[in-house]
Image (cartoon, rainbow, N blue to C red; front, side, top):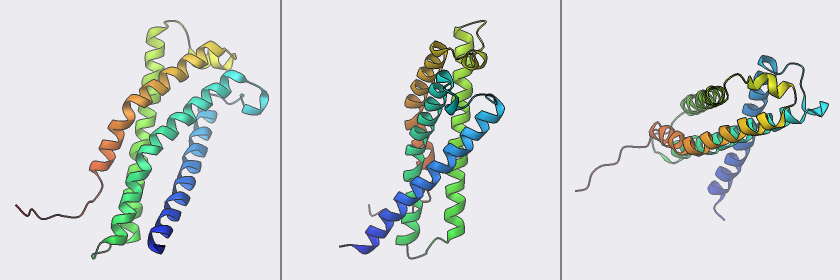
Amino acid sequence: MNTSLFFLALFEIILSIVVTVAVVYVSYGILKKLFFKDQDVASNHMAFTIFMSGIILSLGLILSEILPSITNVVRISMTQQESIDFITVAKYSSLYLIIGFFVALCINASVFVLFSFLTKGVNEFKEIQKNNFAVSIMVVALLLSITLIAKDSIALLISALVPYPEVSNFL
């Protein structure tokens, strides 16, 4: 058994779980404080629950594109002769997460702008607060569609920032 590969895989699993839980917790808190102070999942408010489920799924899709780049930085730091220190790994990881969070905010904002443009006179936040399932489902469908389309571009952007080692040209 390759023990270094085993511990690297174990580290990646733990890192993925910790980062995902932290990002979802912060995002849920921000949305709750900004837009839905009175709603809660426990209060049987189905439109809010549908909406938050879509947000969490969208974040999960974006994080699934970012976390491999973070683990690539960790792999590079473990396999290079000139080792990358923990602070550099943390800086790159933070940069990737900040970019992902910013992209998630942009996707969410674009969904709300698009929804407002498509349905003039309908305030999606107020409708979700009124427990309007149709609006909630439509917003989530738009959110997931845009996330699915943009996630590969996010992965490309993040992987362009990974500090891969210099490779000489043998030709």
